[in-house]
Length: 43
Image 1: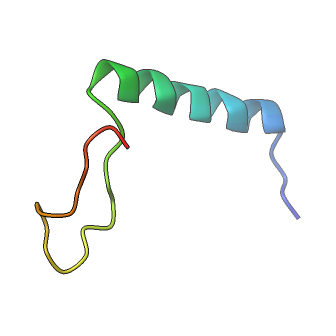
Image 2: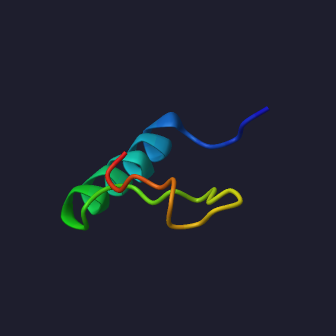
C-alpha cells in the first residue's frame, strides 16, 4: 500500500523531465557490460 499522494509523485516526475530537458536528456542508469558503447543520450 502506498502512503503518499499521487500529486507529489507527479511533481517529482515533472522535475525530472525539466532537468532532463535542461541537461541534454535522461541518464542510462544501466550501463551493461560495455559502458560508453550502447548508451544513447536523450533516450
